[in-house]
Amino acid sequence: MTPSTDTSGGGPLKQGAQGSAGTGVSWGAGASEGAATGAGAGAGAGAGVGAAVPGGQARVPEQAGAVRGEHTHSEPSAPCAPRVRAVVQRASVRGQIVDALRAALVAGDLRPGEVYSAPVLGERFGVSATPVREAMQQLALEGAVEVVPNRGFRVVERGARELAELAEVRALIEVPVMLRLARTVPAERWAELRPLAEATVRAASTGCRATYAESDRGFHRAVLSLSGNEQLVQIAEDLHRRAQWPLVGGGPGVRGRADLVADAHEHTALLDALIARDLEVVRVLVGEHFAGAAGG
Image (cartoon, rainbow, N blue to C red; front, side, top):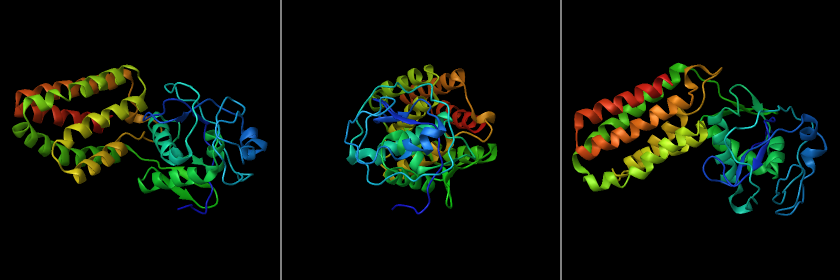
């Protein structure tokens, strides 16, 4: 569904071999507001896949010209996405944009309270505004942004209380499930998750919040998937993703590399306890894990 509103500019979203979730688009280097709102905003109409454009981007076919005269913002580039050129495939462009925007949220490149425009973000991707609007509508359904009539989408501002509430709900769902799984899942099944736990440590060591967020969710998803309850897995992952969004003005929700590494090591310790079927240690570790999430 294409919303009737347009959305206001953020920093350039540039194609790369790796986005936050291994997609073909990522948050890239900055561009001037004049280029975004003037000739640059409409220059991509009709460009073919892989056509060269300023800044080294590859384009996909445009469906409509960009809307002019919209409010824009210039955003800083993300520190963790490699700028490797790749062609965005038309069939999957919406999903790639959703993933890249989610990564930009976690990394803080889409800032709480700011309004962003689909035509301007579309220019950064090298696509029309339509798939960007659709992606932003998905983020609106997830609660990450809200529609601003005739302007675009504003990133939702949230505080420490919401983060604590999310951590509490996650604990209510995941702790009983993990304790039940600790009693029933054989050690060899837990051992199969060791590479995922170790991957979270490597991701945390990069210091990139978006990279760690994806790996973190992957480990939790794999653990909960052993329950065989897909509804539970989907609900838990939605809550987990929302818990990873930054707080307004930074605050305790902004974690540095040391915090990420400490959080990741809790995964490996939890896995050890699950293999040993030490229910008390599992209970304590999971409780501390979510308490840490509530505090940032």
